Image 1 (spheres, rainbow, N blue to C red):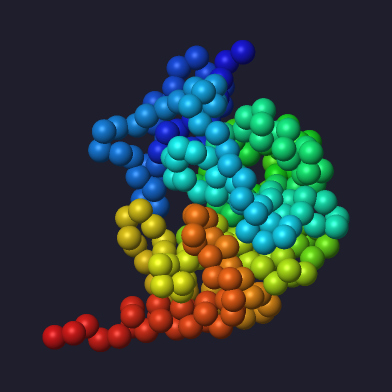
Image 2 (image 1 turned 90 degrees about the vertical axis):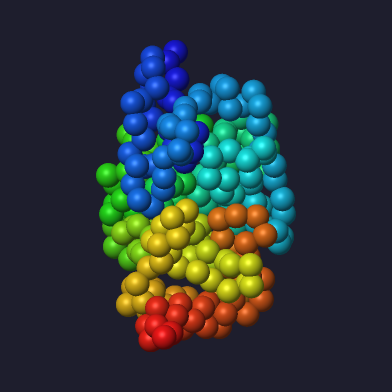
Length: 268
């Protein structure tokens, strides 16, 4: 059986083929990058031979998953364990037998929700394996590289995934960039629609690897949307990238800081 090649830089899977694709549109976009050494590809089999997924409990009911050694962007995914079933937030490229066994032992998945195209990874394979829908925002439909019936593009501003678990489109980084609000636990999972900084504030970027910020007007709009969500904790895309207390006021202050920095007169 032919394999769907994985981009080694962004981790997104492409349709099955005998030879690697000639290009990765995800990486050619200015929100990502093609390495100076050129485009590189791997396969799911080769990835599984040298990598594994780890699980870490962040708080009761919330597990973070990551691939070691780091692969591609190096994001983590999250497994939410709710009374109504489990939800996977964002996705990893590696889906090995151990990961399937562990998640099935925890009750499987009711749904997968992806924040934005950089974390599409092998989402169709995950959805088929766990026989669940994979929700991606329809505004980012053009970045779906492997079509599959398990993919469920959603429209509008909010999507109730399960009771107490709602996806919210904020835009900014991508038109459909979203966050996941776990209301019953006061938790916001953000991917890098907003990213936690080393000083435990938040940043809002159009391109993270290329250091291109979002305009102040766009961040102010995102801040207004976030004011309607009640959350105490934020967990972003990377390890040690979280705000574990008073996250709502911290994010509001981060919005103000971002806007002030971009709108302030330039020093003479």
